[in-house]
Length: 303
Image 1 (cartoon, rainbow, N blue to C red):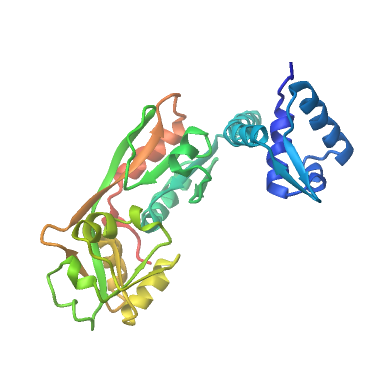
Image 2 (cartoon, rainbow, N blue to C red; image 1 turned 180 degrees about the vertical axis):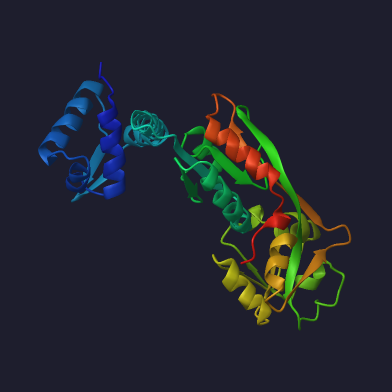
């Protein structure tokens, strides 16, 4: 029977990342001969092939795909454990890793982190936005410690704490025809260019909670990474956007933009912090949660 070792998973992951055996060997500080011998021995004992050669390229077999998926799940947990041991050995507290599923929340997070770093000088903060298996996958795989999300996904082993409430509004330029309206309806956006963050429409509140239920689509959908550029485009009359009212008001003092309510009742949401339930929380994680929940968005610094 083959003995699966961590090195086999590391080789699979590095070959997938680097593209060749040579590059993977260099990354792992092995010779290509040693790497090839290690994997050939494993394949022989397991009785399966992990790769098929197609010219100078390698293509994973079904067994190889299975082990690669396992490597992506397990290796981050090994690496997290080793990192913590190293930090404890060096007298450090650790690294707080935060996953963001809320693009507009960076302004709020900046306020929280600036205070947190002053209180916990020996703790680093890392913020991640892109995940191979989504925010929940990153949380379960120990890639992150917390996830900031407006759309909590109820799952066993994860609990959510509400942080603050907010209203999603339409943002238009001051000279826009809708700027003087107290509310807008889905049909009002039929001829508009809607500017959003690069997130699939099904996960955008403006689509899921406002447009889609009415069977309405905007004339054009444009995506931008930057909040500043997005609102500059809106102020210039190049389109409209949907953002939290608190964020819009921070910009409205210096930009020609106006928030307008979406529908008669408005679109109301809540930001949550998601965390794992299966383990004891270090003090620095608890401290961040307490601080985040104590600072309302109205205190966010001007941008």
